Length: 205
Image (cartoon, rainbow, N blue to C red; front, side, top):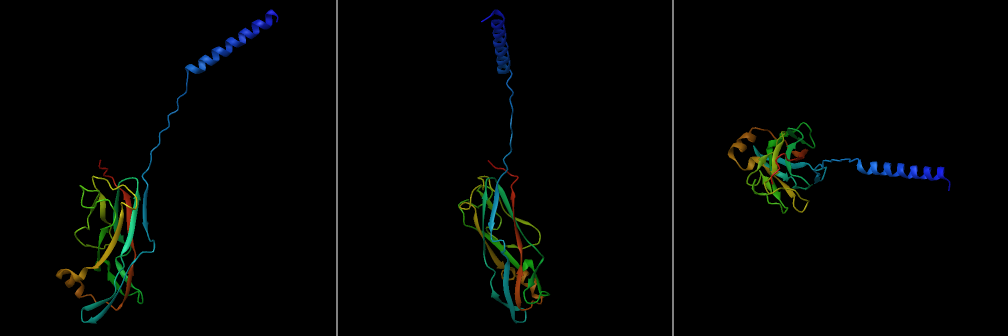
């Protein structure tokens, strides 16, 4: 090997060593940040409605011919959540006669807990505002289930519920008086309602 070739090879090795050393000393760091959103799933029959039948048997005396059916629903969540309920319209509408209408507060409801998450107030997993009372259905959203300080995260085994409907005129004298002057036609009445599942802004630890 001649002298010029040896010098060229030595120079090439030196350049390669220099570039390799420079690359090792200047490492480019890429930081990736991501925010994981909570997963909230509401499981319920999308066609669920409030339906009941009623007929007048005497003046201002009515007989229920069809009870509204209970509604089952469950929640799967990786974050804390709240639930509110509202009617789609301010009136129940007659099935046979669409001109026949009954105000939605004719019906009330409470929510029965079937899951393992405890629903006895803010110091439990869930604060159930209907636990000891019946709430009248309304066109405005009513918050009925909220996150407790034990946390209501979980699947369907933890968060399973039943909505049970009640006629408001049966329990209190003031409610009976309120509906007494309303002329209700014999019919089957129906109305849609919404269950709104939202992420809780109160994150207990």
